[in-house]
Image (cartoon, rainbow, N blue to C red; front, top):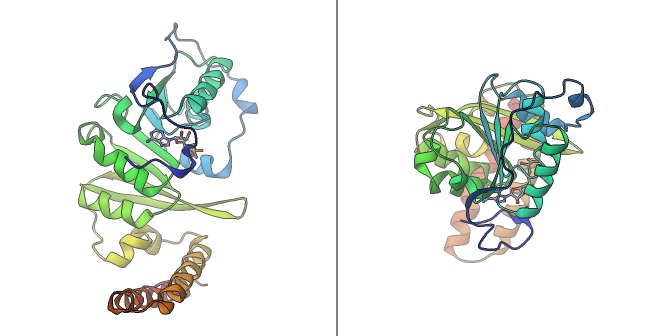
Length: 269
Ligand SMILES: C[S@@+](CC[C@H](N)C(=O)[O-])C[C@H]1O[C@@H](n2cnc3c(N)ncnc32)[C@H](O)[C@@H]1O
């Protein structure tokens, strides 16, 4: 499986193992109702938290600091959560946070790769956020038997969202919702997927976001402007290249750009 570029540290065989719990599970303690007041949650993580239905068990894969599962349990949104990460460093930080906030009995910590640390059906909702779209796609594809146990996927890909959507729609998941959130001048995309048949088969919509294009997200015009700038840069490079293959790619890129501009003008850009 391709790793996320931001994952950082090298992986030992132990790190790549299948979900070694980092912490023993002491008796369940009641969360401190005053403690969550001081937990800082960014706009991006708040947008993810808003997508989590009350009462579900969440597995946050690639949890890093575990801010999201801690927030969800402290707020009483989730009775329990699993925070998993591929790397020892992030999981140790997560373990410290969970212990400090008295949540050892409510949040399980798992060390390992993607969904391999989970068993089928032990969590209702999967969160994978801040990872590349293809890393997320490969993690989902690697463990179909575990993926099948989820009722909802909350995904926040940092790149390659089109690849991820195409895989989801070809593998029995439909985009229930798509949201944009801005933080420190960057726009982040959140995809909420559920089991079902994706109704949009339009390749352009699957690349850009069928629910975004059909909705009224206040950040859509800015998001499309970013995609247009990216596409223009790509086209400028393709126009410099020679040969039939480059000409074909440039024609497809120009067509995509035309559709992006039309969508942007509909969105009020
Ligand atoms: C950029 S952080 C995102 C943290 C958090 N989910 C968020 O959105 O703020 C990505 C984390 O994913 C972990 N990671 C990368 N590839 C992974 C994989 N295949 N399985 C589990 N965790 C992974 C990295 O170690 C890192 O802690």
